[in-house]
Length: 398
Image (cartoon, rainbow, N blue to C red; front, top):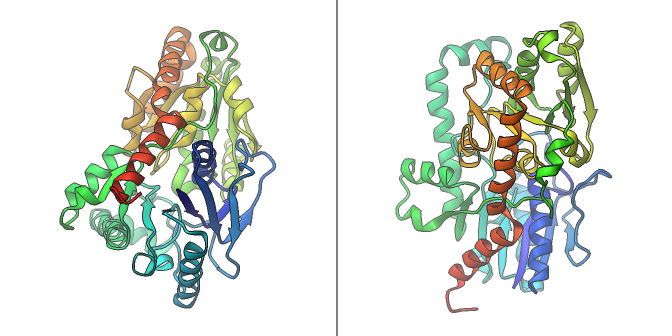
């Protein structure tokens, strides 16, 4: 099959691009041809995964968007231009399957009518996304916080409407976890939606996994890995929890924040103004060396799709403590077995961190179970599921 992935930024930006590179390599190994269309080139020398040489990559010039925002303002003139570009490209390359990773639905209108390709939308976020309200400033922020229950209802309807719009314009809407599919199916009014949706996990990135012996060499390091954007990652909550641990209990432990983003200065100011000790900002780097050294990974995100840093950490024998603030957290982490889930309460989160800091046996038990649980996310198993999905769309046609 000829398989086309649609991205905004390529080849480097976040988890979605990394996943596409992993899937592309495995699909090529199995004899398929892989193409990528994107709007803007973005490269980082510290990428943990390279693009397979056989992937055919093409830039669509002249498309404007804010790369720091998940919201995409649709320019109707550009949408028409991109849609026609896509139609011509699909016909020229004889594309069989289109996997839309990041494009708005308006940018692939008429593809089902004017080509024979099957199109799949992969939704990278929780359809019931909960944005952080505490950082909205001024009168608007005060009003939103006062009317939070109503605001949540409006937000939910907005996200459900977005999913409904995709369902109407694709052959299959794919979620990253069964809990996301179940939520959408139970809340939408679209008929027969169970048959028009599915879920496929993101694969593990690395081709290896840590051994029991590797756990012995772990350092007293706690890591946070991700883009430094407060409304999404809420790293300020991790800093607050870390600051609540006294110097004696902290012992020789260090907190390393791996990543960069618009709110890095905001976090650095918190650390300096509150004199929070033993915190380092490592910038955007290949996280693998940090996974290999670290004993604990922390996550406090307001929302996630399929958090790759949790899977990557588990694969490298890092015990995970995460706030149970997004649905896929409980799809991945079985509390007390392969990680620890807490509420969003800072005190509870801090206690869980301290528990792992002082209990080496528990830390290693969770890490070891995490390594074993990652096997279900191998790229081979994930691509098997994708191939089954492709074949179900074509039936006996291919």
